[in-house]
Amino acid sequence: APSQPSQPDSDGEGGGANAPASGVSPLRPVPEPSEPSKGKGFGSELATRVVTGVAMAAGGLLVLNSGPGPASILVSIIVALGVIELCGALRTQGYRPAGLIALLGSVGLVLGAYHGGESAFAAVAALVVPTTLVWYLAGVSKARPAPGVASTLLVFGYVGIMGGFAG
Image (cartoon, rainbow, N blue to C red; front, side):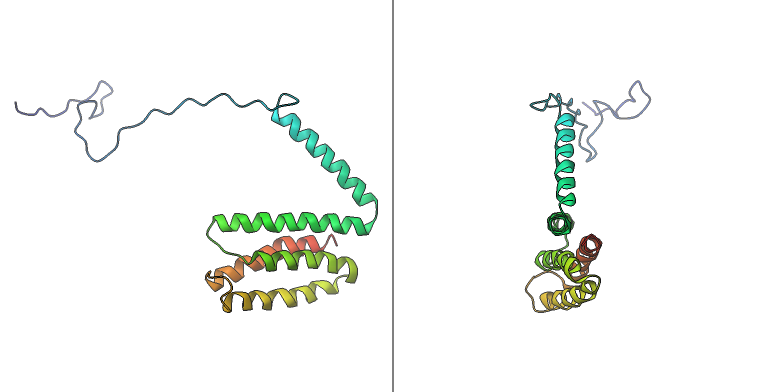
């Protein structure tokens, strides 16, 4: 039997169930979203997040109220977590920052600014920049040197220097 050309569907567009395959896969139905999971305890995830945030804020205020020494330790911990988070985000995008250098430089800057004032900014930067260059040029990391140096200095500048002002 001779093959018949496909007839337009009722919506006026060509193709349909009888349309020849033209290299395009058929559309798959979108699955219905499942019911959102209910959090345990207070009945919702929002309540848990609010309680956690209030508890962390209260703890942070207690530490900040106890003096500059404990506050600089708290800021150092927050800066360290920020460095780890930003390095992880950059790695997901294909960059390979030297996380150890960024971490040590950022935390060192916060503590140095607490003990030595604003002269710590120049001193720590004078250590971080050449160390980063040597790190990549010596081949400690097998990443490309230019993006590696740039991403490391971005992390140090964005998290470390900004956090250093809290010191």
